[in-house]
Amino acid sequence: MRILFAIVAAVFVASSALAEEPSAGIENTIQSQVDAFLAEDTATAFSYASPNLKRLFGTPERFGTMVQNGYPMVWAPSEVRFLELRRQGELLFQKVLFVDKNGAPHVLEYNMMQTAQGWVIDGVQYLVAPPVGA
Image 1: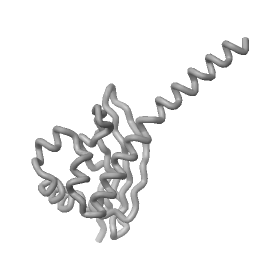
Image 2 (image 1 turned 30 degrees about the horizontal axis):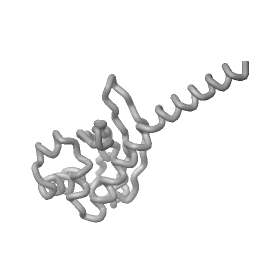
Image 3 (image 1 turned 180 degrees about the vertical axis):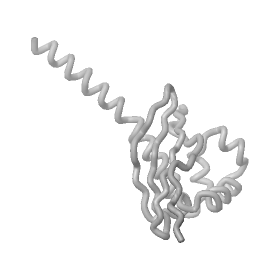
Image 4 (image 1 turned 60 degrees about the vertical axis):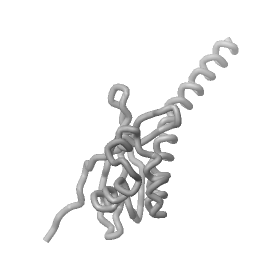
């Protein structure tokens, strides 16, 4: 009976570790890219992009310009908070709350891809834009 309990416990611990690993790796990838943007290191930031995004933008400079102009809250956030990780079939999507330098919240969803080198970012979309007021 003790052996059966030990086997069940070992399987549970192993499956829990596997379930948690994508989240930690994904959060690390996104945070590392944000840290590179904060340091204005577009080459390092570009290294976290998927092969598809690298082909699309071609150079770290073009990629950095797109992020700086299109996603200023990602380029220079005052706060980054990871929300839920969602699985859709084989795809993983990480929601992230960015607070921009003016204090406005932005929720973005990162499409993540696992490669032989680790997790990379395959796209980002707005989920919640900041409120507009008069």
